[in-house]
Image 1 (tube, rainbow, N blue to C red):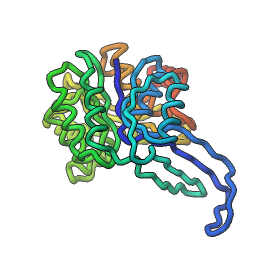
Image 2 (image 1 turned 120 degrees about the vertical axis):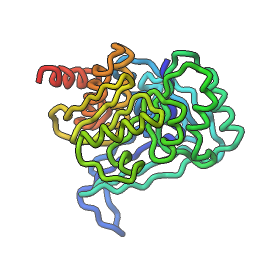
Image 3 (image 1 turned 180 degrees about the vertical axis):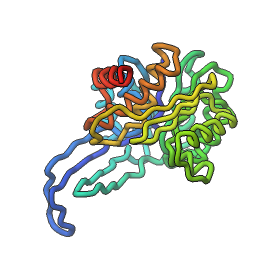
Length: 303
């Protein structure tokens, strides 16, 4: 089973205004509400690809209830710990020529709630996959992913980590199965400017030297690079299409990689499925659907 973790999930309220007039009453031209959070995105795309998962994390208040309801409506199983202090975040994304974001803070977690979440993780069995992704809410330490991997190191798990900076680097000694920095995050980790695919691969290998098994680097419109656990390097431009949405593309890439690897055991297939899942999300208003991913895969394999 695949388990995804979203420690600070949200309801994302996306509103479009044709002519924003600050200080006046404005009316929306278009609005959408959807669940936000990197692990949640991974679970939804996995479901679209026909792969079951369980979404873990924390939910609080009426917004937490709605997050769980929407996930279960998508067919995603949930096992959230209920937090009592505050509500799950509402993130407002205002599109009026350019996009402005106002993100909520989320609940403040207690030691007892954090311990209850850890007990859920202790139920994982050998062979399971755990996806740790996204930011950390109030009440948890910045080393929480490291703490999780240390606590579970006696189990034979495949752990994927999609986080930034020190939150990611601190997990490397525990040999995560997959990490997925983007190019900017890779530059931040090493304090360099990276211009070419060759340089991306070189710095990805440095992360392997620090402990990561598979390093998948997303590069937006320039595609992606995978340095795999067996020493192969794969790189590709993305399939052709018009980008309309970048939200969730990286999470979709993680889901596609895990789904592709689970189905084939082949790193090239996993890489291409990840690349096409990320692109399918970028080319649509929502998260990647199976038929979209399969169409892009066919395009990649015949081009």
